[in-house]
Length: 137
Image (cartoon, rainbow, N blue to C red; front, side, top):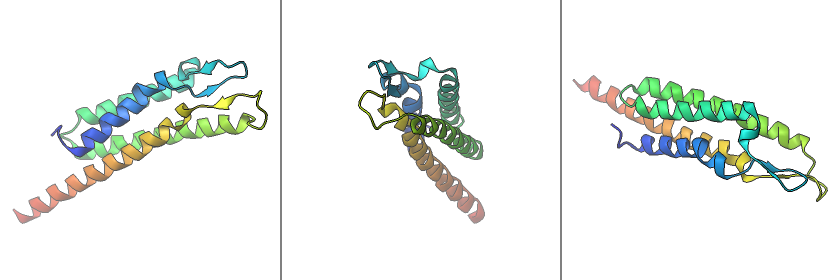
């Protein structure tokens, strides 16, 4: 059923990984230019794959186990993306004012991971409910 709470979490994750990276920059360069995710091929691929996995998970609402596995893969993918951001952020020097600043776009994978965790928890709860009803039959 599409009206379940995990679908809401997955739609929010879809928006965070598919729409918000176009709005929020990852960081600002020394000369004040904003660095969006589209300027790095690897970030484009990872955000696109995460968005695709969220959409695939929304569509496969009838197969809860499949949906749960896709959610786990999406969490791992967002952890990899977050790791790349942390690696880049540690390589940026933030001590002097003339050096680039980190943007709010670097925190988008954290929000996606939290929402995907909530979605997986709700999927697991539904799966346990169905299993308990099947035992009563």
